[in-house]
Length: 45
Image 1 (cartoon, helix red, strand yellow):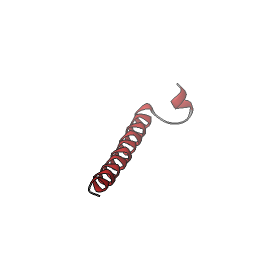
Image 2: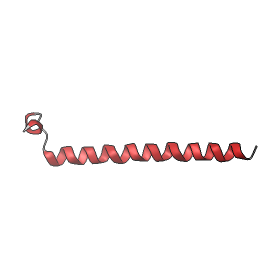
Image 3: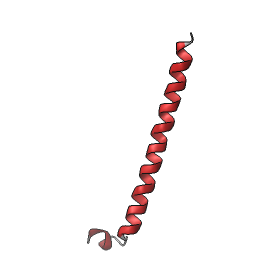
Image 4: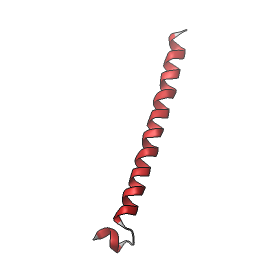
């Protein structure tokens, strides 16, 4: 298996991939919230 040749187990790889997805999603959510705040602030002008 490719992962084994790199010295990583499937479970470890899966856990790392899951964590990366969580943090990427959090980053996108934060960007969306910041944009929403900015748009709401501009609508009051």
